[in-house]
Image 1 (cartoon, rainbow, N blue to C red):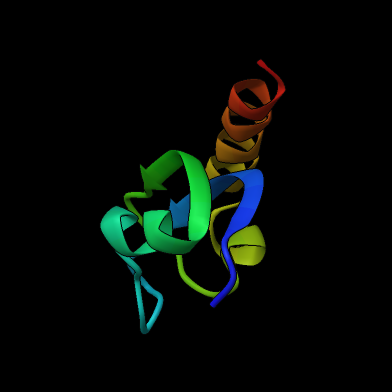
Image 2: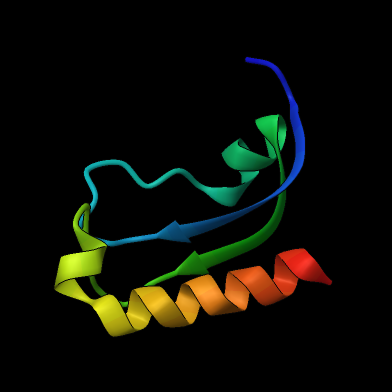
Length: 65
């Protein structure tokens, strides 16, 4: 898998079938933010919209700095 040089943010959701660990992500991506969410799954925008928006804002702030 090619290395992605762009800064990357990942939100890990407990309801997903597979939740990649930061060490695995860092092998292929320039990981600058990894957040483990308390709830939510594949449809986080419908399940926990407030958490998703807060995490997206935090990620954007991290990626823009």
